[in-house]
Length: 214
Image (cartoon, rainbow, N blue to C red; front, side, top):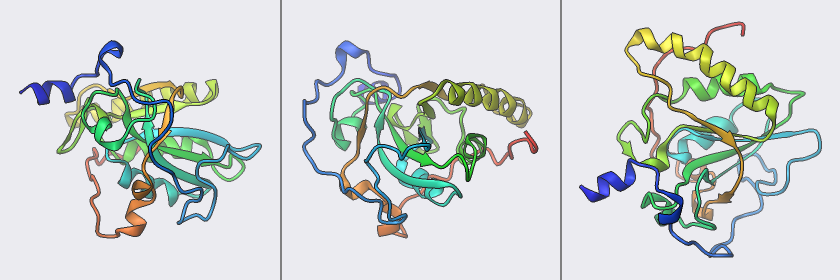
């Protein structure tokens, strides 16, 4: 029962694991699907956002397929522990959620287009879980890097909420916050489903389409 409680409530900062000043593993420089740098700063004129929709393997696969996306990478965001390991994040004691870095070219796509994909491909009402994946590391999240992204994330949330409410879903619990600390995940997690095509994908979603023409 204590494990259940620890994983379904966000840890308090003073109770988070201490972490370490440097990572304990190396992260490959390039995205093997897109052939682009995955940890380098976004190219000039491009924009970056981090999305959490549950297990980051499936989330990354969804976003590397989107038109206008330059690169993706998986990591940990929204918490307190510096340079965490996967095992530490899964303990629920770092505050982080599994998240995907998405760098995109705004001349080839819009943030709204990416948000439509975000809302439609998971259930944003589940709190600290996605489907059978239970824990604070699976919470829905948007970590923005500009005030314009924040405004659009909130606007689209408010448009999607009345679409799913009549279907029996509760309030949207998605965390919308600035991208502060973030850390890349271990190399074996990067583009995991390209390396393991039959690997696990979380299929939790509402089945509801985002309103058209917005």
